Image 1: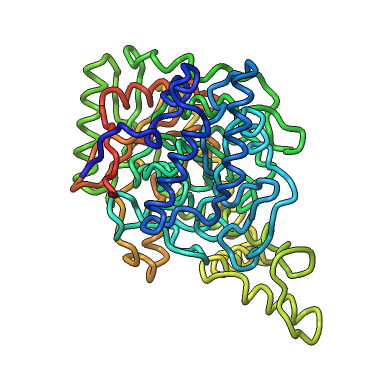
Image 2: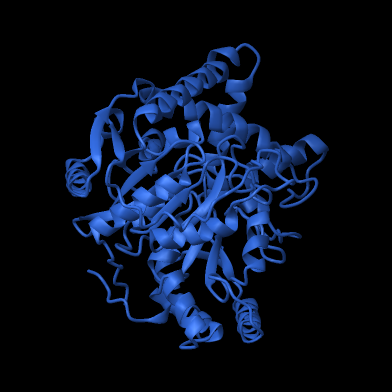
Length: 489
């Protein structure tokens, strides 16, 4: 069932900003509407780990004053949520892990600092799979988030709290992070838009690292235009992040109306192979026909090395996680085991008590892959596969303006359905992982429903070509005319 769009909490950023500019609503009124929505549906959805109502009201009042004083901007007074692995000064940063329970960030991430500077209202921190390791948000040590479309199903992961919050009207938009599909997969499951920018376009400073060569921050929004608006604020060089790219960035909203007439779109056959449900294939095929009717040239393309992407990812990502998570040892911050007889026992007990099963699994996998005698056989080989994947994408983009595929093999699955089988859970990201390995920009746009559950279409383009990703995404959005929202009341 779908809900009508008539209330303030369900506005897009653009709609809300226009109303604020016309004086039809205030930032305080808008924020109160969203806070009321959070209080009404959060017991069912469980999207948030922390909501700071007092701070949100203060930020909204400051935004109203700024507007009265002549302040302008598309995010001024807009209530947003932030995934709880991205730092906001004075708010918890737990990564949904016991090992960081009680930790409060002493500084802002570059992206949250940019949002504050733009006048956005930061409502709080959303749930995730622990340290962003998961595809369902069931790995959170704090709580399991439900999909607003069907509370018995997962919202996807690891940015499941952010996706669910946007879908349920608990924020006008949210930030997530994407290491192997953690923005796009939950966006598809929850019927919202999820954008992963090119690696290096958005600063990772203040993002708690999972796999440093793969992680990227991006927006989850109600439509493609809002994703472009947020990317305008988020993109840019940052001297605090050595992987941040120093280049000029365009106004990402400028190409939204460009359409697809004359564009060549590739359809990688490896991304509609065995495992993708027939229902999802049918919805995607219907969308392709609509794009062709608008003048797009859609052709199949083969990228054979994509068949090895999942295997390469689950060597590279755990290896980097093993290194990054070594810092959580009970010495400097976070949880510390009590009663240990020496330093080594304190290390062991802190990490045993603080990390959940999936995080431990990936640390062990990564440590093994990096160990003497196995490094070349596993990590080295995985990096060679990664290079082949990058080269195949480059060749594809010599012929095509963008590539399209389903975002996920299935619609949202039931809570608990895959927790006993890590490999089956990992397969949830099989269609999104290639873009991370190659560092490409990619977006998921909702294009329909299967048995009442959303389906997403993924659009990928060459490095730094977010403009084409957004242009095609906006065209897909117009043709799909999705617009539905889950009915929770």
